[in-house]
Image (cartoon, rainbow, N blue to C red):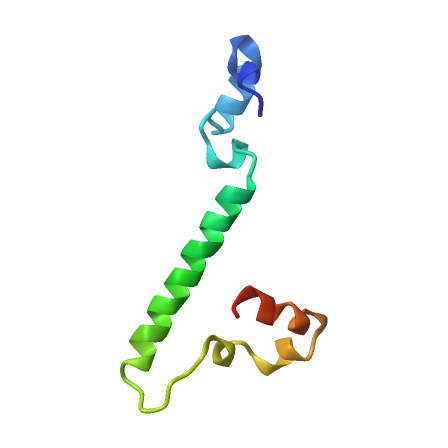
Amino acid sequence: MPKEIWDGTHGDFPREIGVTPDDASNVMPTQQSVQAKADKLIEDQKQVLARINGSLREKIVPWAMIPWSIWQQSHAKFLPAVYP
C-alpha cells in the first residue's frame, strides 16, 4: 500500500482492520528479499538434515523427504532446480 494511504481519514480503515504501514504484507517483494527467504529455508533444511544424519549410519538427502507421489507429478522436473 502506498504511504499516502495512511495520511488523513483514508488510513482509518486499514488501521481499524489491523493493517499497519510497516506490515510485511505491504512490502513489495524484490528479487533480493525472495532470494534471502529461499536461502534461509535452504539453510534451515540443511540444519535439519545434519541433525537427522548425525544419528544415522546411512545418510539421507533432501530428496528423501519428498513423497513419491510428488515425484510422479508435473513438479518433479522443478525439484532438482530448487536444491541441486
